[in-house]
Picture: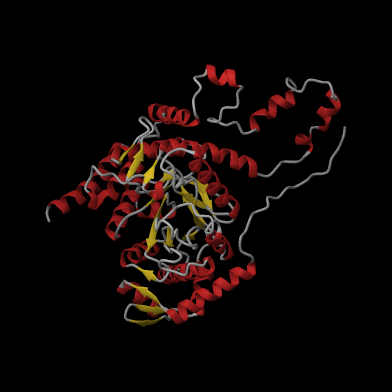
Length: 482
């Protein structure tokens, strides 16, 4: 027998910032918090921060380095999410990457017709079903903002639809505190009570703040509410370099990071150990040619994620999106590169898969294509197993240079381990033509249709369905009584 020594492999990750650059941005953020101040537009948040040692003057708040360091010492280094059945399926931290859709697109690129139209509630349902079915998609978001329901409580309809049509973890977005409270109530109904959901959370709230230097009231109120209950949240200031922050990447990132650190301080003052994920995108120059909030820009790729890694915090990243309006070459390269950079930089919860047109449009066909790309990327970046079994020296010795490996038991045992695309055509021209000469876009549309026709996640109990509906009906009745 030919023997070999065991060998362990390691994946090399890409980083755009070294430790010295991260230290300088961190120091700049601390100086901003201490000297420049941040606008905090909620009285309770200001009271909590002042009680924790902040200097407060009206809406202006200053934080000391000591406050920041205390908060960084208690905030968890990973965020754990369960599925609807209580199993841990996401441990966001380190370089573990999980992918999901996005929220609130106004338009759908309809895979059935190839045309753009306004989104309705059925699109939210179909998006949840597709995300639930795709193997490389790990969590579910609403994807669309339905225009056929009352816009004041659209988030209740989204949450109900997602809870009905997926067992995967959910990332939800609400415009205000009341929507966040309703979403948590609905999750508690499904979980079987407040304590059960708190112990095994299967949903997390994505909170947008106006900017790194302006914390709006709605975002702060949601953050405090979730921290009080120890529930996971993504605390994400939105900076646009050259618009509400310096145009340089370092300056934009310093201002964004100052807002992030304020959020971490606030959550840890409310409840030490409250889980928080930080931004893995923004922090770079805005597109000052078009003044459009693009989703895929070169300069910002990975910068915020690297700073999140510097703090050893869970990172809420962005990937699988495009600013194209159709499934063309621009779409292909932006989706692939944004997925690749998010993966290599180490973002943990990577959202907006399937987004188009600066977040205005979503596509289920694109989500299916991105799922296929993800399968390739994960296969291309995973560790290579090197041991006696995979080196197969005994097989080589047995068969030599002229033996047939095709029918050997070793091949039969391992051939399914390779990545095989569901969508890419790898046949010769004649076979491709005989199968209909289809494009990947057409094949993706066919797969969406197949999922919608065949995929059915386990249904919720009828009593749970009625209780969820009651939450929505209460919101409708409140609005009707005004």
